[in-house]
Length: 132
Image 1 (cartoon, rainbow, N blue to C red):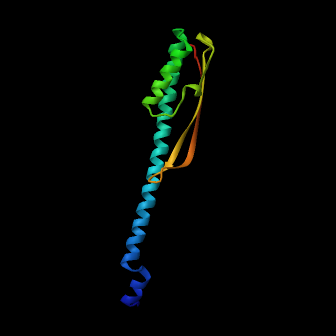
Image 2: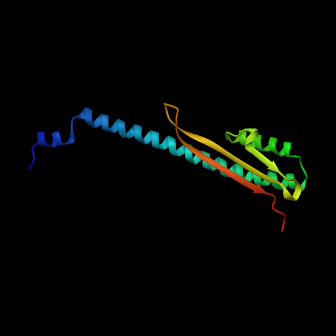
Image 3: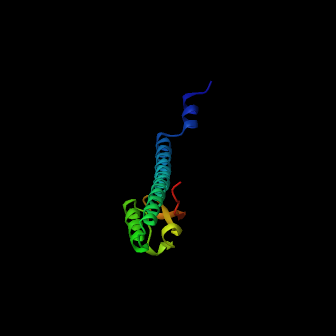
C-alpha cells in the first residue's frame, strides 16, 4: 500500500494540475474555434453553390446579361461572408449555353493570433440544366 505522500507525488502538485487543466482548456478552445470556422465555411459554400445554380437557371431562361448575374452572385457571396471578388467569377455563353466558373479561397485562422493556419479552396463549375 502506498503512502499519502507517494500518491500525491504521482499526481503532482495542485499548481501542476491547474496548469494542465488550463492547457487542455486552451487546446480545446483552439480546436473548437478551428472546427467551427471549417464547418461555417463549408456550410456557406454549400448554400452559395445552391444559390448559384438557381441564379444560373433563372439567368439562362430569362436571357439575363452576364453583368447582372455577376452582381447577383457577388451580393449573395457578401451575404454569406464569402471572400469573392468580381474577377473570380467567369461567365461564358448565354441562354442554354450559360456557364459560370468560380474559384476562391477562405482562410482558417488561429484564434487570438489571427494567423492563417489553413487555406480552404473552393471551386464551382455550373452550367444551365434544361428542364426535363
